[in-house]
Image (cartoon, rainbow, N blue to C red; front, side):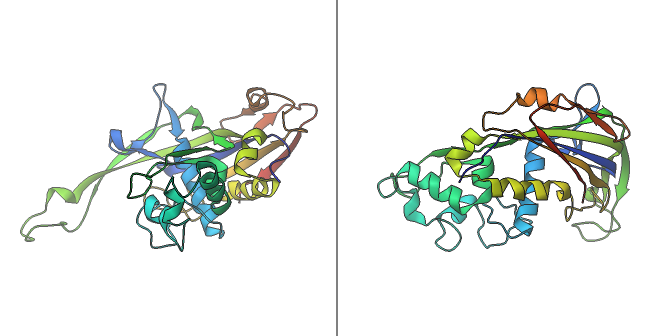
Length: 279
């Protein structure tokens, strides 16, 4: 059974002396917009959600190299694997219909029926397929409530990565960047209409709701030390029908987040609101 009601949600989190999402086009400095507001991309947030789902034992198709639980070196290898995927015949258009492939992929992987996926690598023959799957869950990039201050420091290594050891190489010098403090908020929604196509269910929605408060757990690195990023609150709105009582824009607009992490939310008739503390 697919999702029975429209869902909207918001995620409020804090960043303290960490780089929440480095920009590779800007020396890996924390992402900021032209007005100085901090940004964490939707791709980054979905990566963290996938990693936590994987840790909880769910079958995930788009695994990162650092967190994968199988030996597959690429998405194509995983998809065509007999053990971890759907098998090579599934991507042969003469042997498998497009709708059957989409259905099998959604049944196999939670992230595919949640976020969708484009299968466009096909088989080694000319009978490959290109199947786009549109997922019911969307999440926006997160932005800070106020402009953030980005600090940069020079760092050095005590040993060169290469050379004969007679002098220090250029790789011993580097830069490290951080956001001193920021309160960020992101919004998302889950569409029952699109859930019907992928088989995303009320049970899947509960899984997502349980994982959102802990998306930064187990995600520590030198750029994001343990405890430097934490979820303050997850707000979870459930409408009374599949069509929804209000637009997502109106629901999200009821939330006002303050620079200290506190918030106010206006009541909308016909929608239930659950406020969940961070993990």
